[in-house]
Length: 347
Ligand code: TRP
Image 1 (tube, rainbow, N blue to C red):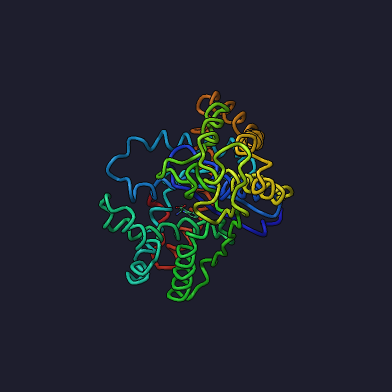
Image 2: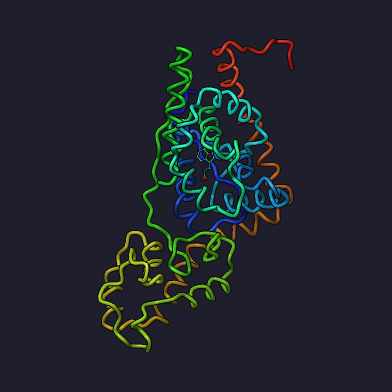
C-alpha cells in the first residue's frame, strides 16, 4: 500500500463535554479529514497538557476524558478510520518532550504570546511552572512523533505550531539530519460561535450549548437569549442590520448564520427583523428547529455510545497501541540521531 500523502495530528485537552463551538471550530473538520483516502489521521486526548494547568486536582480527569471521547464518537470520529489515543499512554511523548526541552531556548518560550496571555488570564492558578512554560515543547513532541504534515488548529494555536516548526528546524540543523518534518497548519475558517450571552462560546463563561443538551434544555437556552434591544413588542422594527460581529448584536441572528450553510436566507432574515415583520419569538423558534435538526444525529449517536460499556477505554487502548508503534519508531530514530541509542537488551 502506498503511504498516505498527508498525516494529520490534532488534539484537545480533556475538559469534559464539548460544546457547539468546539464542534463547529474543530471537530466537524476532523470528521471531514478522516474521510480523505490520502490522509492518515491521529486524534489525541492531550491529558499531559491538561496537567500543566490542573495538576492540583486530577480527580476529574477520567470522567473528563470519557465525556470528551464520547462526544468525538458522537460527532462522527471513527476509530476504524482514525487513530484515537491518549497521550499519557504513549510513552514516547514524555521522552521526546524531554529531549526537545534540551534544545529549546528559553527565550522562544518566554516570548510566546499564548503563554503571556494565559499567565494573565489564569491569575487564580499557580502556573509559573516549568511544565506550563514548556507546554509548546510537549505539543511539538506530539506533532513530530507522527511526522505530521498538517495540523488542524484554531488561530489561537498558530504560535504553538510556529514553535514546533522552529524546534524541528533546530533539531535537524543541530544533528545534521532531516529527522523531523515541518508541519503546516490547517486553519479552520469557521465563524466565531457566540454563546448564549453573545460572548465567545466558552466553558469558563458558562454560556454554552453542549452537544449533549436535550431538546428541552436547548429550547430553554435559546429562549433566554438576549436579542435586539429595540424589539420590545412583537412587531417592533429592529436595528437596520444586526451585525454578528457587534458584541451588542443579536446572538440569535448570529447563530442562524453559524447554522445555515450556505447562508441563503440570512439576508432576508436581517431585513424582516429590521422592518418588524419577523419578531423574536418565531425567529427563536426557527433557530431552535434548525439547531435541533443539526444536533439531533450527534445526540442520538451520543446516547448510543454512552450505553456501550467500556467503549471509550477500548477505543483508547487500541488507538494508543497503534500510536505507540509509530511514535516508537520516530523516538528510536531520534535517540539514534543524538547518539543515545537503546541497547537491544535494555527494556
Ligand atoms: N494545545 C492544544 C489546545 O489547547 C491541544 C494540543 C496538544 C494539540 N497537543 C496538540 C493540538 C498537538 C494540535 C496538535 O487546543
